[in-house]
Length: 246
Image (cartoon, rainbow, N blue to C red; front, side, top):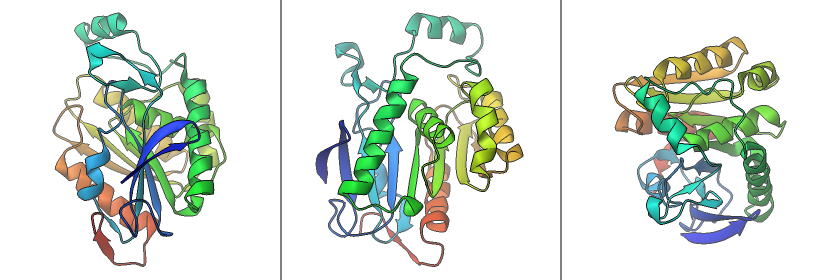
């Protein structure tokens, strides 16, 4: 594994021909969620059953949340007091929200993707972007608000944001493969709103693979299995799979 600065973001790069992102294989860029360290999703590269030679890029969010989060980071800040009030009242509805800091995070992710193409010689037609929770919100935002080519979008336990802006943009991505998973007992991001996001993407013509599961705000084994299948189908549909750790 290598640690690189890509487009101004610190990132961990692994997989590929040398376990350091070498070769010319397809790429998965996966963003961690709010409050997690930059290493949070890195272990997934060893368990996902992906096309042989797949390279993994795990960017670290730019905002350091300080000692209270023990190394946790964020793509943009959230109001913790408000979050606690909303959870006590039964859940969060962010559908009309355009978070402060989202535009800056979007620019940073776009710069990273540009650097991945330039420095790792990644083919955008063989690059999937995605993430967990806040990281997935950002990946979805970049996919909808830009025209950059991507092979697919992986949305793990996320929600609908900025509906008045996102929904009109969705038809421009008609046919884009999407994997979306969500826990039916998610206490942070309500399942019903995730299902609404799924419905809007489907209505706009995106090819959504929906993976609901019994559980909370997490990435269980069933989601890892479906994510691996999604990556095999999307990145190398005519190639036999190989272990991500090989």
